[in-house]
Structure formats: C-alpha cells, structure tokens
Image (cartoon, rainbow, N blue to C red; front, side, top):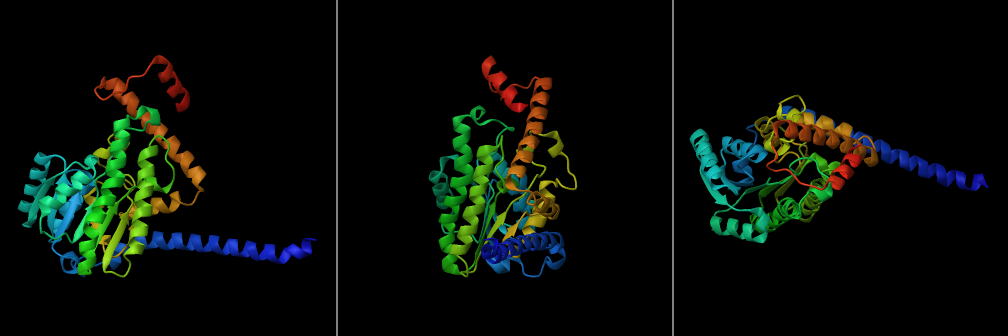
Length: 340
C-alpha cells in the first residue's frame, strides 16, 4: 500500500521544501538589499524632481515621520504641499522649510477623520497645481496599548477613517492625473504592526494590514504606467506616536529618530517598491518574519502588555489622569486578569 503513495508523497515533500528554501532565500535577499541599498543609491544619480516633477504632497506633515519626510524632500529640491489639521503648526513648518531650503510650500488644513470632505478640501485648495509625489503618511494609533472595549467608539472610527479611508481616497484622487502624465510616485506609509495580528493594538494593526494589501494591489493595477507605488513599513521610530513608552523616546540602533529615518526612506523612493524604510528596521523585519504567525502574535501581545504596564504605572505615579478611562471596579478587575 505504501509503495503506491511513496512517489507522489515524496514529490509533494520536495515541492514543499523547495518553496521553503525559496522563501528563506528571498528573505535573505530582502535583508541584504535593505542593508546594502545606500551603497548602491548615489544621492544625485537621478533627482526626484527630474524623475517625477517639482511638487510633492505630504499628509500628517507637522510631526514625526511626515514632517521629517517633507523636510527631506525639500532638501532634495522639491516644493512641498503640507497637509495637516493644525494651521498654526502648518505655518510654522512651512516657514522652517522655506527658510532652510528655499523651495516653495503650500499649506492645507484638513481633518481626515471627515473622510471624503477632507479630500475635497485638499483638491479645492490645490486648484490646478499638479502633485507629482503623494506621501500618504497621516496615521492614528491608540494612546497606549488597550483592550478593544477600552477604546472609545469615536477613536475606533477615527483610526479607521485616518488609516484606511484617507490613504484610499487620496490615492484615488491623484493617481489618474499621474497616469495621464505617465509619471508620478505614491508612498503609502504603513507600519511593522502589519506583519501579524497585534493584540492590544488590534484595530491599528488591522488598518495597517489593509494598507499593505491595498498598496500591493494598486501597484499591480498601475504596473507599467510610469507610476512608482511604494509601501513603507517602519518599525519603532522615536516620535510622538510612540510616546506611551519612554523606551521608545530614546534614539538607538533599532529606534532611529524621524530625521534619520526619513533621510534613508526618501533614498529608497524609486529604487525599492517595498521597504521598511530604514536599514536596521530591515534587519529586524527579517528576524520578525522567521517565526510562524501565531508565535509573532504571542510575542507582540507580551510586548504590548509590557508597554501597557509601564505606561499605566508612569501615569499613576505622575497623577496624570486627564486622558484616563473610568471603569467600574468589576471591569478593572477583569482587565487585570487579562493582563496576567
């Protein structure tokens, strides 16, 4: 009986081993490319202005990665449209860019929790100004790692609107013009949380998995049209979004500041369609993807439980309860049980 099935089962086993080997080789290639990329990307090889055009638009451009990315584009000679909610911050950022790099800027105040209305405001304010590089950076995370029922309904809706609707609608609003011109670039900034389900940041991680899938499919739809569609998935960067952990507010080998991250990430534009955006993040990503998803999920949960514990202890010690959440004694006990 075994003799009948031996040959086909052996063939299946060899095919499985072949695919596993190819997967490992591909991951090693990605790691090597990420680490060595800067040495093969001369900064002035082809200017972004010459390749794509003179105007870039960056959402979420008054803080963190978005602001640093806008400065880096300006350093490379691009005029920048800055889009964010806070007009005062927009004016300040625009003035800093113009005085430092002598390029043009334009500011647009828009709140992406308002969905299509925000996109309509952006289009109206731009008028006939063409956008050659679109950077969908705006994002929203939890205040700190929380269980789903701790997150307010409004926060959940805002996270989905900003992280999913904004990137989708902005791509739709600008990609056709790029298509007609036969050139342009779209950069969708995601997060390393997309690599597996992430307990205690459940909604946020799920929205970033959407960005990853959406960007890959969009690249396929518009392949061969002259449009670069890049997916960036940074891991931890020293920004306000990670303010829930003091450990992430210190620059280190694996946690760059926003300026260092943006300098490398912009360098990959037009050279890498998929990138973590920073060389040490590429190393981390390689090792993160080695274990199975269930193990990555478990590790992510334990990591967030530690971040949560540190945050709550810090908040308690500083008596900073302005943004706290009030629960009944019974509910509080249930969360303590889950935290074990």
